Structures are given as structure tokens and as C-alpha cells.
Image 1 (cartoon, rainbow, N blue to C red):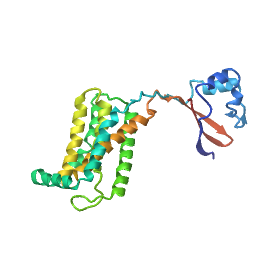
Image 2: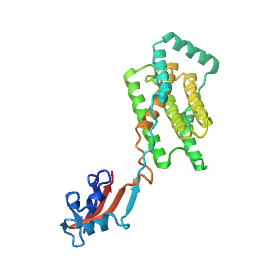
Image 3: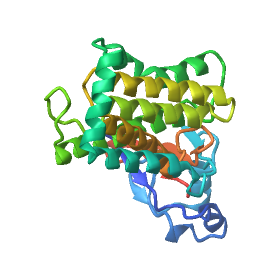
Image 4: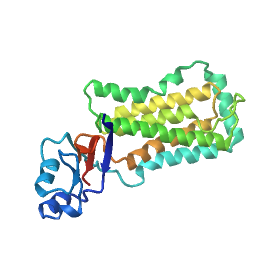
Length: 278
């Protein structure tokens, strides 16, 4: 019986696409010294063996990555910064918060649960548009990775802030600042804006309107102060912007072509060798 299949990651084999050049120049021994031979023993690569394994079209998979342009400058961060600073300032304006709460309860008090579902509307719409054939900025892989990272970053920030600030809700419960529903809704609205805003501004308008409605409902429900909602909106937008700024766009077929996978055997152990070309 063979041992379980193992994966060997060989990321240092190739630097700046110089691997092939080194191999062709006869310097392959200093770069890659081990290979599988049919006898199951270890030996140095010969140039012919190396070319037949690494460059041959019979390798299991070839993948390539393409880095997208990153938007620079402070413009995308102006609105989040203003919302966060405005919400923080309102947090210390007790009278203003209470007056707004009283106004909301007197004029549009709300006791439903619609906002619990509406916060997901921008996220669901992005994938619905893609299914309908309206392509966004990124492919499915990158889009999904961006959404997941935005959600996780937003959740980390909001959860820690709720714990550190320990603000009491208008209803008397704890963990009020910032609003998690509003923050999530605006993170996903920003996500939809990044994916479809360049196609039509109406996509962005619809996403932000939905997120704003969620925030208003949280105040009308007496679940949050207006300061919680304003700051939460800024945090959600900022979370998504930071994720788009740092994302490496590795989740597409062209990018994955820089990977090469081929089988190997050392003694009784069989597995796969994964090679990445930088």
C-alpha cells in the first residue's frame, strides 16, 4: 500500500520567470535537483528530463494570474471618513441623539424585521445581475473572494468596536455602537458600487438607497442611535474599499496559468508537485 498522497509546494523554484532561462542555459542543477524517475529513486534532473516534465504539454494543469489596476488616491475614502467622524461626533451629542430618536419614534416607528433581509439585497443583486448576463468588474472567483473578505473585515471591526465602546442601545440593550446591520448593508452596497458602478450609476444609487433604508429602519425600530448608523455606514464602506485596495486578483484562469502541477513518486510515496512561476 502506498502512503497517502502528499503535496509538495515548490515556490522557490522559479524567480521572475528566470527558471526556464536558467534551465536552457544549463544551470538547472543549481535550481532544481530532485526528480521522480520511474525506478522510484532520487537523482538530479537531466536537461532533457527537466524539459519533458516542466515544459511538456502533458502537465496536469497550467494556470496564469493577471493583476488588476488598483485605484490610488484618497477620493474613495473621503465619504467613509466623513461618515465615521460624523457618527463619532454624534455619539457624544447626547441631546441630539435623543431628539432624533424621539422624532423617529413619534413619526415612523417600526417593529418589523424587513431590515434583517434587506441588508443582503446588494450582495444578492450582484450575483443575480451576473446570472442574467450583466457582467461586472470582476469574474466569479475574484468577486466572491472580495465579498468574503469585505464581510470578514467589516465583522471584525464592528464586533471589536461594539465590545470596546460598550454603548447602551436606545431600547436598553448593550452593544449599540456601531450598527452591525447598517455596516454590513453599506459594505455590500460599496461592493455593488465597485462591481457595477462603472456600468451605470443607477446600480450604485440603488445599492446605497437600500443600505440607507436599512439604517433608517434600525433607528425607527429603536435598536440604534443615529450615531451608530452613521458610523456603521462609514465603517462598511471603508472595509470594502480596503479589501479592493489590497486584493491580489489571483482568482482567475489567466492568473492561475503561472501554476504547474505534475505527479511525482519518491519510494513508496506518490503525490503531486506544485510549482509557481513568479
